Length: 470
Ligand code: PA5
Image (tube, rainbow, N blue to C red; front, side, top):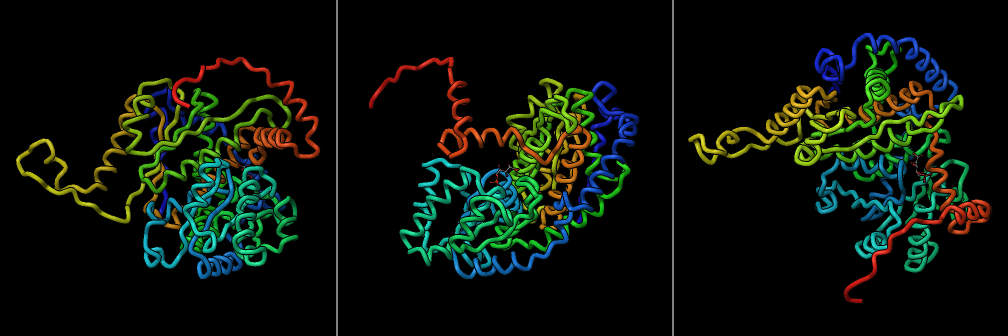
């Protein structure tokens, strides 16, 4: 099982000096690379960046909790948002059938159906509660802070429904929390009402939490080999320890994106996966890259407004949607292809004629060959146009390669934070939105914020008069 990172087409040799990166530009980073590497390793040692050591954690409690859930319930609903949902969702999409819930229980290896309750859309929530039998359902409420309004609102509704339908005592069995070991409203509720719970280690924030109980419990409940995930992450850990950028794939990927963004105006980075299963990993990566690097201030207090906008695309679908823009639009993007060498299935295209008609060129090939050819063709076409692109290839999609890939992106992001000289682990922009929500909803202690909002909301507005039937 392997992962390769090919960055030939990011380089000046492939796409020319105007758009490509020179080896000397990468070499020029080397002193900073060593300093950032030292800092990350020190923080790993002093325990302030525990996400690095997640591949080696004890998962006994998670497996035990997952086994109990598999034995006792037909449905598993994850309540969470942002990092508390995208990681588990990405694992499920990558490693289970896209039609998992429609499979028979036997084909699901006896595992429950899996649902994600993320948004606070009243119709979405009602539709989900209408579709499942809550007497056969366990809800895993996940929030690191234990306070996020969306998650707590969904929890309140579900909890009340459970209490009403099952009685308080039985209802307790239908909720399991994953949250901070000590802090937050959810932890208080767990202590007060006696819900089962798992911990998100104190110094791990949402978007770096996929390899904690946040991602591992739902994955194990859905039959994913979580040991394999951690083995893959450990393998990537061994590959990303070098302080030489030329030997460290995560540092190299971060370095190339950093040079592309800051020296060549590539403010957008597209992650284009040539496998449906990897599409949600694209979403997860978008959150990781955007929320970690999109920062107003450096760590020493200078305004930088740093960050590169991540975009998710899917091959081949987006060849028929986005590629025209990537090929001929502004020179403001890098494209990263995520490819899979060997899919689980080989699908042969039937020959319907022998005589060179319009479809005969497809007959006898496989769909696998076609998707590889289309990915490669897109890569070559972008290169011809001087558009920087690179490729990460997974030998196959397995818990091992997915664990390795996610870990690589986390190290890449942590390291990129060092290059931008910003803190990749905070999210002041997200927090302000949360505070404003608390103020508008009347949370005690946010009275001043409420006044600030009232002064802000003077709008320029065009009203479109209502028409038609009531
Ligand atoms: O990465 C982050 O920290 C955020 O995206 C959070 O995951 C998100 O805001 C949800 O927070 P919480 O897990 O505290 O509910």
